[in-house]
Image (tube, rainbow, N blue to C red):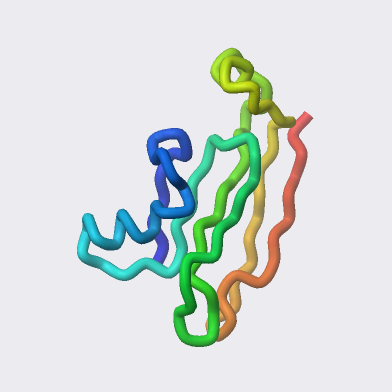
Length: 98
């Protein structure tokens, strides 16, 4: 089970999966958030043979006035993630957009 949200709308991405699970009364395996310039994937707990994790995706636009105001800039990028039915999230490919 996945849940996604816009990265800057959640104050603490590491706690997001726990907060959203409690709020919606549904167990999630992965929380996926975007529009963040600094990647900080977080393992929250164990879910069987895999980890329950928060995955942060980079911003598509890269450098912008909002990111500059936070002093968090990066190249525009996207990510492709691979998952295994038994072991969960197993790979990530980051593509820099120029």
